[in-house]
Length: 209
Image (cartoon, rainbow, N blue to C red; front, side, top):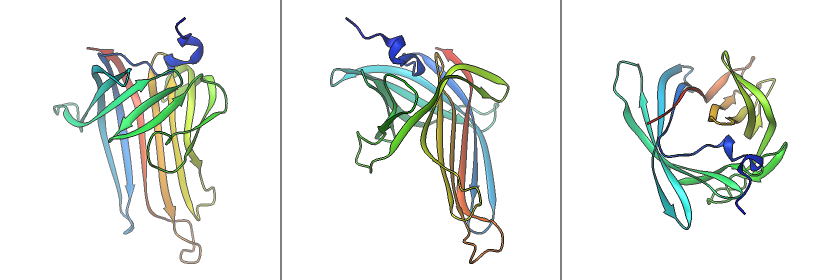
């Protein structure tokens, strides 16, 4: 009997040849010299083909980018993704990462690096089945997947916060990565970012070839 994909939650990670997802991305870089650089661009992901690897179907994701709408799309990178009975895996820059663990359920935890050589890293999913709002758009039946959730409220050490939101029928709808290092109170009289990066990615369109 085939698995009950709806119950397991595979529809939080839809993956078919021809899928197109377009995102708005903003990256803010903080340099040690105090400068702040902000970059905005569009990112388009196209699931261009599939192939059988080790008895599993893997999907090639061609990722394109352009800075303004008038510019042509330029290839940025190629990722691969696949779903097996228990996991959704994305190969980012040749590194396999377990993005979701099935069945989806509140407070489910797993090692996101179990398929690569990196150190153990606990991923967890929270707020399963709730509505998540991105700007003015609501995504019912979403889940939040945290890779790290450290935010220093008094800004004397660092922020290490990595969130991905997956929504039924849409897949990845929102991503936020915050890496900031703050100046020590010994050296600075008030909170100050001495280096860091904030990456935010929002789904704009979902389509098909």
